[in-house]
Length: 113
Image (cartoon, rainbow, N blue to C red; front, side, top):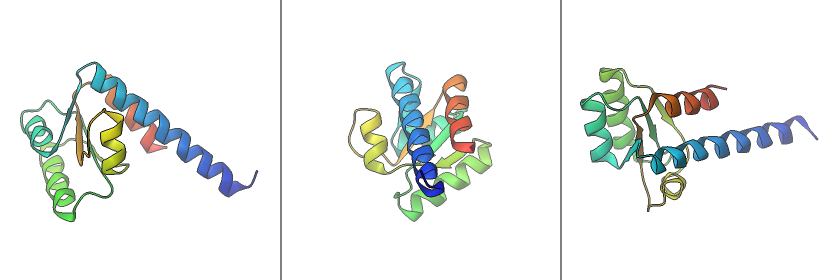
């Protein structure tokens, strides 16, 4: 196995774990999805972690970067709109907000590697 193959396998493993955490958060009711609901969760202090799809519009990325910086909420650009939607059993989703500290910490640990 080459170094490049091992990096690709590691990235796929991290993605799988993050999507598993997202699915658990959805099933346990510890997640909000969609721009409006995520923005509301940030403003009310419920969101402890925000994920924005890598293929979201530049306007959406800028909006959530500014909101998360202002309200001091960790923000990650991860996955595609299709992947985020699929992970929670819905259609395309540009943004997801986690409202559970434990699940958010699990995702943060994976993405910070």
